[in-house]
Image 1 (cartoon, rainbow, N blue to C red):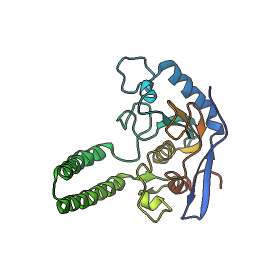
Image 2 (spheres, rainbow, N blue to C red):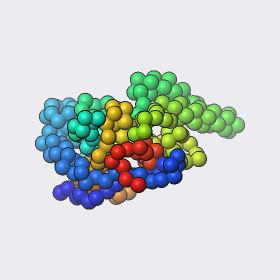
Image 3 (cartoon, rainbow, N blue to C red):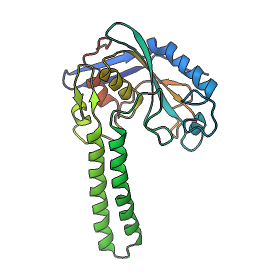
Image 4 (tube, one colour):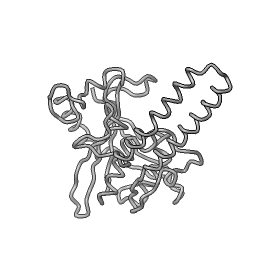
Length: 249
């Protein structure tokens, strides 16, 4: 059973000193239409093909559930459109036909991961095999430094478009004084706002709901609607929303 309540996509903008938000109310009908399409097809591709990478069965196993977002937007001519997003990756995939992309170049991301992961795993193997405590300490320090640099390289790929026409990094968007947490920028709302700004669309409303097995903490339940998260979205959404036609202060 769908549990819909009014929620908000929101965040603080350090540049203006204001908080900005969008309600999910106007996107409610579009969100219910997406839920109906997913229930009928059981796939993000809206087909019933076997061995489908984007099958919703994935969300009832060890992966548990995932957040989905729906954006009602308007172009310069006043024509309205609906756009979909899923949080992070879906079953190891960043891209899916009919869904907005992440806010980074996927080919560059894959290239970085392909280069760094084997090196980090090789260090882990050496650490596990080493019998010398001093050597293990040195190898752990090297692995830590390599992992931190890898994350900096990943974060540098994130180039978010804002509603006032800027393209900013996570650090430029954020009101945090520390490094961005892992996963910042990968939720539905940042993806949707980035897509809108990049394509000269005005977001009118964004609704986010959870699909699948309840998460480990019990904070997310199947077909319940939620607002944007404070930890990863709050620090960047305000700056992304700044300048929006339908955004409220």
